[in-house]
Image (cartoon, rainbow, N blue to C red; front, side, top):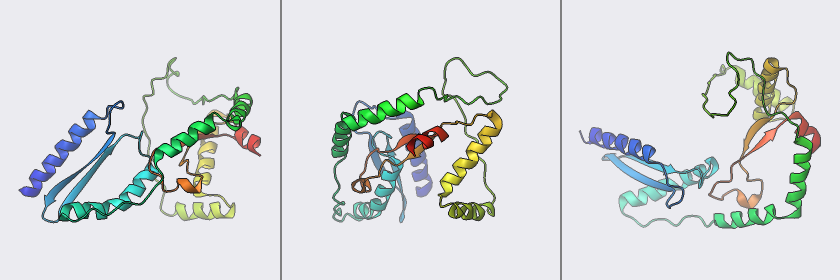
Length: 220
């Protein structure tokens, strides 16, 4: 009965928390709750806005949570966390770079060369594209057979590419077969941590870059 009651409270908390969301103009934009469901069973619920954490940061935090939660549960001293550069330093660095001549030069170059790139894919569909974007969509999942993955990894190694690059190429071939458009722009998520000092930074550094055959030619 104790575990059932704890699980009920946990479900209620998650439903209320999800419906409440966050006020982006007021702190905090994240919180952590611990629920004891039994003598040796706990559930940890971490809620946060993506304004403060990206997926990479969650991985860093999950590595630190077990000893922290154990100390809180056992009433022991809280272990000190690792010393990290504060996120505000990254924000200040980005602000300085955005005002730099290098940033302005890069922005002018890409805007000039990609201004006429058509970001719309003329996909065959049952209905016409709406005049205004609604951003209402859906997700279609397709699972690869277990035997296909080793073959894809081998293909990637043969071409000195990552598995992601191979799958992106396959995706573009598929879209080309539907659209007959060669210059396809695809948004690609990146961690934004290409500097060694950013590897252990907690914050939101995730960004999207776009990939197209034209961008590749210009970069070379």
